[in-house]
Length: 94
Image (cartoon, rainbow, N blue to C red; front, side):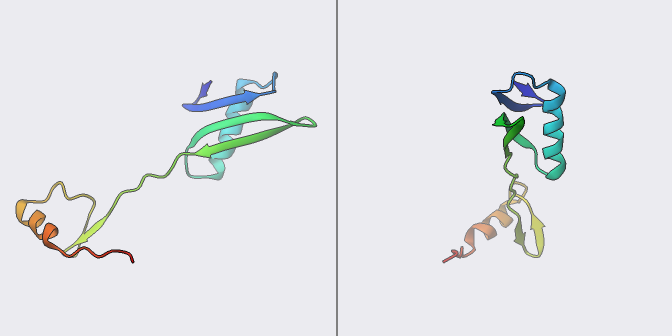
């Protein structure tokens, strides 16, 4: 099932309500700044619930410093600036 856009699976717990699932989601999202990708709830024995979840990966944007300015992408460069960037010596991490 999907709750708040998050894939949720419940295994071995017949009496878990939608409100309880939402409370588990809110608890996890309160502890982190990332959004949940999926949540698995299962019976851990002795009346306990085992919680397994995964967070969505953080988005990554490459920032370049070109002639003292920070730019995200080179798609707005004019032809001269593209040629300058193309002619630069690229250094590896080794």
